[in-house]
Each structure stands twice: as C-alpha cells, then as structure tokens.
Length: 370
Ligand code: SF4
Image (cartoon, rainbow, N blue to C red; front, side, top):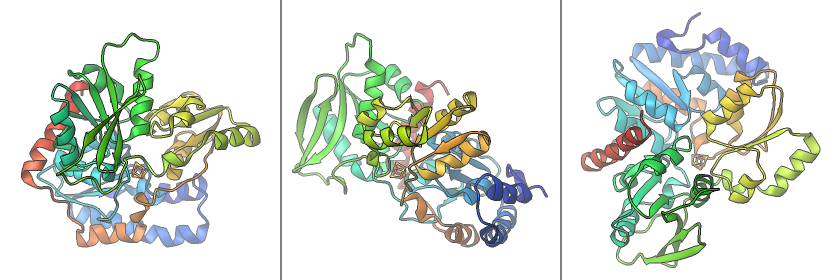
C-alpha cells in the first residue's frame, strides 16, 4: 500500500523497517502501526505535510514526508507549495524556522516545550549589545536559535555550511554564537594551516552579568557589560547531548569494540573532536558512511541519528553511546498523533521579528549559493 500523498515509504515498508532495521519487538510494532495509519489518513484529509528531524523516534521519521537535519528541513520548508498544514516534528526553534520559510501555511508542533539548550543560551537583546560593541563585525548565529536572535544577526548557518558562510560574509571580527564548542570547532577547521587576517570571536556565555566572547586564535577573552538588558535564560549555549561525550569514552569504545571510524557532530567538545576521525553534521555523516560501508562506526551524536544510518547502510555496524535529547523526545508518538488530529500547537511569530529573522535565513541561502 502506497502512503497517501507522497510519503516516502508504504505502511508495509515502515512495518518491515521497524522490525528488521530498527529491531523493534513485534508487540510494539503492533501497537505503533495503527497510530501511523491514522496519521497517514489525517495527513491526506487535512492536506498536510510532515517534516521530521533525524532525532525523532524511528516511527515518526519513517512516516514523515521529509526527514532531515536543520538545513534539509529548511530547504523543504521553502518548497512547500500546495499544502494547508505543516506538522513540524522537531524542536521549537526548527518549527519557527519552518514557519519563517513557509509563512502562509499553518505550522504546528507536537510539544511547545520542545526547547533546546543551545537556543536558550542566547537572545536578541544580547546580540544587540554585542553589536553595539563591535559595529564592524559580522555576526553569524548557528541555526539553533529562536526567531528573536535570528532577527538580530547578519546571517545564520548550519553545521553543513558554517565554514562557507563565514568565508563569504564581510565584516571583522567574525562572531559566531551561541554554541562555544561549535564555534571553536568551526573556527579551528577554517583557520588551520592558513594565514588569517580576521579575528574570530566565539560567544562563551554570560558570567556574573557580563557577556563573554573569546578570541579563539589568541586565547583572549573580552567581557561586555550586560547591564540594562534581559540576559538569556541559560548562562551558555552548548548542546546538553553533544557536550557530554569525553575523549576517554571514545578511547574505551575504540578499545572494547574495535571501531574503525569515529564520527562526531561539531557540537562536541573540541577535545572530543580532536580524537575523532570525521566531524560533520547529520547529512554529512550519512554521506560519509555510504561511501565507506565496510567500516565499523562509532557515532558521537543523538541516539536516533543511527536510524537513517542503519537504513542507508544496512550491512554496516553503527555503535553509539546512545544519548537521547530530552527536548526532541518531548514529541512522542501520542503527541504526534494528537498534533495532526487537533492541529495543535500552532507556531506564531511576531510579524516584525519574523521579517528580520527571515532575512538572516535568506542571507544564509545567498551566502551558500542556494
Ligand atoms: S540535540 Fe542538542 S542541539 Fe539538538 S535539540 Fe537537543 S539540545 Fe538542542
């Protein structure tokens, strides 16, 4: 049976994949399939499209029309034409991004409290204060931020295009925020073995009411007063999943499981990046594994990222410390079904903020030539 309206897999294929690729027990699959059938029926009835991030549980990934990392979902959102409803099974900053790029559609998310520790480590007021102090700078934010932050930066970037965006954007210093580890890893890759005539500042967070930036090539910190502004709800903007991994853990896996290749996401601590063999975002990892299927991998990322890897390379062994993102997992199969059934929770963004935030997303597409 073909999925209604363009889903990539049939329900029979999804059932087989859950059993064979993802090793779900039969009794669980029996419980899951009627939910997916209902979602599929509602998708057609409501003229809806489903976007899902790679960190969603496999049944949600498999029933989605498009699944991907932030960049792939951004491209997909730009292309949505004849649909009325978009179910974004993601965290909130991504659902906001989907709304920004398909503004005339009704965009819903299963759980409004699906936040992100990176997004909550920065806000628009903090970016404005940084710009007052560095008026000639190019301020680039990782895509994992809310619309009020996107509205204040010159461009956003993703793990897939950060180096390209920074190379192409004008301004000095270049300030990359809010994830300190991500910024250090990207700046390191960008500047190694090169003469550099720019200054690269990474946002380190807020300490004692001050905003801290670090010149990563010269190891010097700058402190800006945060007086008179609303500072972010979290003191730093790192990923609570990726920051947990340690070099010792990688050494343990290499030893005990005879790993050939360690693939890590650029949100990991630079010490972990240094002992990994491949650093890249989700899509890059999938591409890499497809070209080297005979290796035994350790995947240093969110646990469910192994779902598309296992499907792309069924013969390959993917090991993972298996850490789940508690924000991504706010979306359960039950809330996913409720979301499309009741058309909740709608994502709305203030018009003025949305206009400016959309510009920084468009700037990313322009600077990366897409
Ligand atoms: S995995 Fe990290 S970056 Fe992704 S949503 Fe969770 S906390 Fe945010």
